[in-house]
Image (cartoon, rainbow, N blue to C red; front, side, top):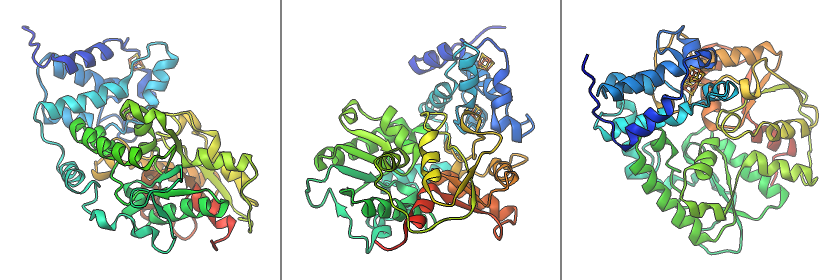
Length: 396
Ligand code: SF4
Ligand code: SF4
């Protein structure tokens, strides 16, 4: 059969180069959450996705079918971890993200729900179709400094992110993080003109839009003269660290759990009440598997008086993805079982009454799963910051 080598442009060549390192051992099947919950019918696991990409490029078959295979991936990185251990070291997530970019560049339309998200990011700077002027309404009454409106010598920026800014439920996480920082006496501020980090656009393959949003945020960061950025979301944290322009390296980037764990080490947190309950912690993929931050959130939970931390069987590097990453938050794929429901059941099996996490997407995914499992009366999902703030007492 005659081979067609169309689309072997620079990006296609990079992808082929990555995927050709695969020795087809198939160990990554065992780790892929999408393979697990779809009983293998959606994709043949990580190597199945990348093989489809490989042959899609080789045989110039860049189309919607390939898009639907690639968009199934949550970008959780479980496959890369096992592949690293096996010494093949295929950077599957990088290949999949590059593949999504290749699709965009080839003019393949995004999935309908994702198209709306991309349009909103472009016109409003957030994925939810919300007005930029309402971005900081969550902070009303908290008397927080706006570092872009009034110059200040404050060096810490709390970058809130889109979901905690606009989602009714997740706004409580932003208020808890700001409340903790205020109680401890950290001098910090927020940005009135904050925009999406652009990570959602990047993960959907829209690199141009990501770069535009990154440029706008960088101007705000540089103008406000900050030295440290704290994020709510592991996704924003990861993007600032790994995808932003080189100049961001002058700024110390931290997920809020890292920063607050440092305050615990210095003995700066004090608690007013005991939380006499059992909690289990879910490692968000972009905090744990992508950035190795496993201990700090646990340190925070262990610091709370009365709270008992128990572990799920799949934890830390083996943690099961919530299903919300990789641009899947906005698309309702019809896998046989929803990943978040599997994970909530695992959490309930520990005997805990609380599932704690440290990612807005995980929080939403798990709360939805608790509702569909009809367990709202006996089981709750909380961000680590909410538990900390509750134990520190509500008054500011
Ligand atoms: S674990 Fe790595 S080498 Fe093995 S099949 Fe998966 S991608 Fe290929
Ligand atoms: S990143 Fe996660 S969801 Fe995507 S292929 Fe790898 S294991 Fe599967």
